[in-house]
Image (tube, rainbow, N blue to C red; front, side):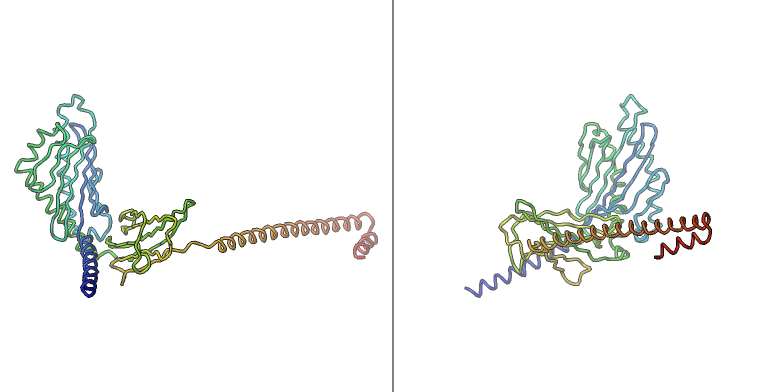
Length: 370
C-alpha cells in the first residue's frame, strides 16, 4: 500500500512536469495577428486612412494615406516578409482606399448632411497554434458603433446594428467572400507565419530580473518580481516558498507587455498577510535564453538594529557636513580679513613715503615689523 502511494506520488509529479512543459509549448505556439484600418471621410471623399498591423500586440507595420507607404517597425521584419511582398501589400492597400470610401458612402447614403465626416473602423484578426488556425474575426464599425461581424472563415455574418442589414448582402456575395478568405490566408496568417519563422533574425535576450518587497503598516507584505528586456516573448514566472512550501496569498500579474525596443516586460506580485513566516519566498524565472530556471530570493525585512544604524550614520554624516561648512566659512572670513589688513598696510606705507619722505616710511615699516 505504501509503495503504491509512493508510485502514485511519483506519477503525479511527472504528470505535473509534463503539464508544465505542455503549457509552455502552448504559450510558445499560440500567436495572434491583428490588422486595424481606420478611414475618415465624407460620403464623397476619403480624407484620411491609417492601417496598423500587430502580431502578439506588437506593432510590426503601418500604412498612412499621406505617403502611401508601408513602414515596418524593424528592418528584420521587412526582411522576413520580403520587400516584394511589402510592395504587394502597399498596392493592395492603395487600391482599397476607394473601397473604404465606397463603404462610408453606402452606410451614410441616408444622411442629409453629405459634408459630415464619418469614421469607418475595420478589424481583421487571425489566431494560430503552430500551423493550425484557431480563429478568424472581421468586424466593421462606423462612428464608434459596431455594425456587423463574422467570426469564422466558413461562418455567417452577424448584424450588430440595423444600419448594416443591407450591407450584409454585399459582404455575403461570392466576390467579397473570396476576397476575405484570400486576405486571411495570405496577408493575415501568411505574414504572421513568415515573421514568426524568421524571428531568430532578431537577437534573443535573457530577462533582467528585479525582486523587491514592501511592508505596509497593517502587516501586509507585498513581493514584486519584474522581468524585463527579454526576447522572445514566451516566459514563465512563479513564486515558490522553500523546497515545497505552499503559497498562500493574493497573486496578480501585469501580463506580458511590450517595451519600446521590441523586447518584453512582465511583473508578478504576491501579497501575504501578517502572521505568515514571510521567509523563504523566491521568484522562479524560466526563459529560453536561460540555461536553467533561475531562482531570485525575496530580500529579508531589515532589522530594527539595521534601521537604527542607518539613521545614526545619516545623522553623523549630516553633523560632519555642517561642521565642515562652519569651519570653512570661518577660515574664509579670516583669510579675507588678513588680506584686507595687508592691503591697508601697503596703502599706509605708500602714504608715509609720499608725505614724510623715505625716513617716515622706513620708520612705519620698522614699527609694523616690531
